[in-house]
Structures are given as C-alpha cells and as structure tokens.
Image (tube, rainbow, N blue to C red):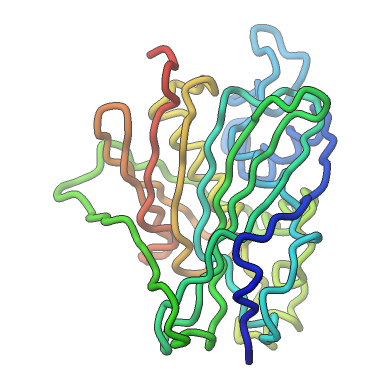
Length: 287
C-alpha cells in the first residue's frame, strides 16, 4: 500500500452547502435537542415559538463540509479509514438560513507508527457564499490503519491531562434507539450507521452512532453549561474519537472549567468515547 505524500499541501473545493431553518432544526433534533423535554431548546428546533428567536447549534458547522470532493490519499483499503479527531472554530453565530462555500487542504500526513497507522490532517474553511465572510474553520483527523511506519513526521498531540477531581459539570443524555437513522438524514449516509450487514462485516454487532453525532451532543452540553445557551459565546471545540457508541446508549459529558476555557470528555457504558476534549469561548464574546 502507498500513501500519496505529494498531495500534502493540495487544496480543493469541498462544495457549496445551502440550508434553511428546517435543515438546522433537523440537525438539532439529530443530536438530541428537545428529546428529554420538547419545550426546551426551542430556539434550535422551532422557528415560531414566542420568546425563542431561531438560532443554530454551533456544531452544525461540521456538516457543511462535504467529503465527496476529497481526494484519495493513497491506494489503501477505504475500510481502514477512521475519523479520529475533529475541531471546529466559529467566527460568530451561524445564520439560520444561508449558503457556505468550503475550501479544504491536506495539511499533513503524519506517521503514527507501524502499529497505529497514518494520520491525514485536513483543514477546511467555510465562508458565506457571495460575501466571503468566514463562518467556521474545521480540522479533521483521519487515521489510515496499517499505513504507519513510513518514516514521516510523527503525530503531534497537544498535551492533555485529565484533571484531578470530579468535573464541574456532568451532563447526561440518553440517545434514542433510532438516533443514527435520524442523524444520517443530515447527509452522512455511511451504511455502517444503518445497515446491519455492513456493521457485521466490519466486526460490529449492530450499526453504530455517527461520531459527529456524539460530537454534537457534547457541543450542546458545552453550549448550555459554559455559554448559557448563547451561540455568540461558542468559540473552539475539539476532541478525539476513541470508541464506538451504539444508538440507545447514554452519553455523559464531563466538563472541567478553566476560566474562559474547559477540558471535557464523553463517556458511554463506562468507556471514554470522546477524549482530549478542549473548549474555548469565542474571543470578544460577552459573559
């Protein structure tokens, strides 16, 4: 198998995404908004509720980037490609309706070692179509299993240590048994999340919940615990995907505050499923 190292630095157009409030509401419901109490989080799930002007969950930005235009980074088996890291930085609240143009760049192919594979790092910018106003920046880490050991630059992980003591916030969410079927309507139609035969072929007893769905649940917890639900305060959120989640399982988002920032992790069934989580309030945001 060969990785195409000459693609490092290559940029491409990830496409234009148009959306309306109904798309942002579908996303919000797809990451659990209103599931426990339909009268809560109405700003994200309805457009005409008194005292609840419509708004967009900040992690909606993660679905603005299409991977359909993404080049192939080598001749590896695509079943060995795993989404293992995600960050998103908001430049302000996302519009309830609009269009975004996204450009992406393969920033690095890092060597995680022969036993751990290679890491493709992709940086993307979403900008408002027509004006070019920046909306969000994203960094995606894709691990290519069995492709490490090529002698390239090693993986660079920012130091992260779980704080001693109990978290300042522990927010629990029960996902629905059909959560993956609902979330996939946002455009991620990977059959691993819907087809039992595909899940079994890859060694899983049943279809899995999308990693970005878990990421969205964590984003909701951070938004409410640290920003009082105000999207203007949401800055940067990042985490690594460490273990699969089955639809129907509970997610517990554990948050340790650090002034205007925080560390977090997500657990499910006693396992850490999102780790090395970081959150920073947006610079200049009130509060």
